[in-house]
Amino acid sequence: MKQLLPSLLLVLVWAALLCSVISLCAAQTPYPIGPDSRPQPGVPQGKTFQFDLTASTKYYPGAKSTVWVYVPAQYAPDKPACLCVGLDGPNYLPQTVFDNLIAKRQMPVTIGVFVSSGTVTKPGTDQPPRFDRCYEFDSTNDTFARFLLEEVLPAVGRRKTPDGRAIHISTDPNDHMIYGASSGGVCAFTAAWLRPDLFRRVFTAIGTYVGMRGADMYPTLVRKTEPKPSRIFLQDGSQDTWNPLFDNWYTQNRSMEESLSFAGYDVNHNWGTLGHEGSHAQSIFPDVVRWLWRDYPQPIEAGWSGNSMLRTILKRGEDWRPVAGAYRAATGLAVSPSGDVYFDDAVMGAIYRVGADGAASVFARSAVPLTAQAFGPDGRLYAATADGRLLAYTAPGKATAVAHGVYAHGIFVSSDGSIYATEPGAHDDVPSKIWLIRPNGSKRVIDTGLRHATGIIMTPDHNLLFAAEGRTHWVYSYVLQSDGTLQEKQRFYWLHTAESADDAGDGSDATDMAEDTQGDLYVATRMGVQVCDRNGRVEGILTLPPGQVTSLCFGGEHFGTLYIVCGGTIYRRTMLIPGVPGWAAPAPLPPFGAG
Image (cartoon, rainbow, N blue to C red; front, side):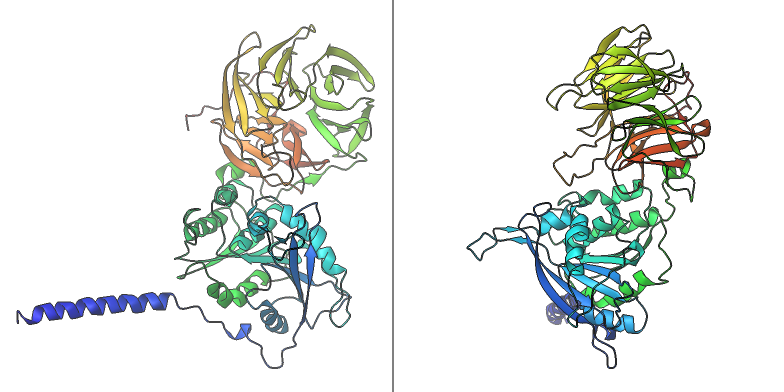
């Protein structure tokens, strides 16, 4: 018996190893495709054509992409078709899947536009010196979405189908789907995230939500940002560690799904057992498409986030409403003691007033462009001009200069009539100044050194003053002294920064700021309105109409409406927590802790 034990142990070891190998091989077996991914008898087949597109110098200079276009047999030019954009070309047998699902009316009549990433080739050679795929797909700005909108889709629209039909695609974002794998998956999400006015239905397979070009921040931003009208399906495999240098791919995809669920999105997923490969996504692709288009044409609505800050300040179902009027390019919002909101329009050469009716009307004409506005406790409108003056309007058209030599970007007037102003400097290398102008006209610089100082505000209890740096992600905090000067300077509020699609820099582009009665700070930034708690953390980001928010203030009855300037247009939104105008008398804030 003792002689048999070593042999028996050896057999058991070999059996265990064999089971492990069999299990591993089974785990690595590619997923099969189903009948919806195969041609079916009697199903009308669409037509496909392709062309090469060289991007303009506006987006990807000299980069050549191949575009494949699928047109279903049921398409009729007199009715614009829905759109599906696929990245990295026609992956997952989409033509066959679309043929079958359209025939079964499980998706609408949809034109597919499948785009490869760009490649730059040096003239006279056949070797590409640059592949733009990572740059195009993994960047977290809206460049690729604009490339699709302004170059790819117009190029498709200029062509005809192989049988001579004109191509007409719906412009309704509810009719648009986008998908991709790996870097293409992140690109698909980014396009819908930044441009929900273009895409509402998204499939991301083995998405690169990792530390390549900033997409690793998406789980955090999704939790903080007011949800957008998007329906999203994610796929990945438990062995997806394509390059662990950047992070754990599977973990990050799981984190994205958890964040989207927390934020109230219509989200679904399918987690497999393989790695960074395509058979799993190809296998489930018909089911994914069915899920994304279910209940069409019912519009996809934004959900309700689990974010406590957003639930505290936002009214459910309340959205941004545009302010009507003949203005062209609004800047510099300011609120009067009656709650009316004023702004400048340099194009029209006028200062406008928005009253209780919500419409903009001319208050005064302005021959010189204004750079900032704020009301004082005396009811006068104070305005900073491009030529370095501070004016006070006592009535329409009646302005007197109260200071000279202050080239202000932001101003506010305290309850004692003191004016605080930021002067960014002529260019980034010139340190900014913070000015204090007394009611008697005396002025002094009370701080220097910020990089492009912009917005300025104080807390409702008048204990702290804040000044924003537009070129970084910082808002500085100062302790206000009884004589109006500043002490205990600290880089305190940390803002999120959005990747710039041009050469504007990668700072927050923070401008105007406002405070609510709870002491929360609202900052107008490139990313949106970032709402910070009193400990310096961004807890909420408000979704905006397309464009960059450049100004904000609370106004209206009891200062319960938030006004913003976005893309030169004014929008307003009723809030649950009212704001506090800068000129208001000091008021205590609720107690709070260290956080």
